[in-house]
Image (cartoon, rainbow, N blue to C red; front, side, top):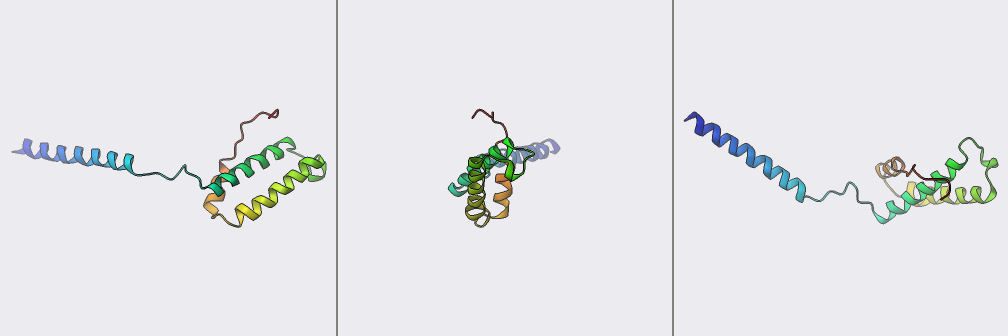
Amino acid sequence: MASILFLAIGIAVATALVGSVAFQSLAPTNDNVLSPLEKKCQEIANEGYRIHSLYPDSNPEDLLEDDMNRLLYLDNLWIKDCVSVLPADSIFSIVNNVERDFSYGE
């Protein structure tokens, strides 16, 4: 009698685990899916980081004029199109996912 009870409990646990795995694999996950605006903001952040990394210890006056103008343009886009529109969670996610692996020749 006890062996039948243990068998039934084992089958119930196994069924629950298999059902849980199936449900998780079928449920859509939106963690890695970015909206078009978030993608645009990610590109802005990546490009801004590239420019900042070219002048790591410089003042804004030390930048080449073209780089300074591009950086000011990107900063304005970042504030207007991203920071003022997206929720804080999205902004922090974008900042944390800035592409830091690139070569200076790009």
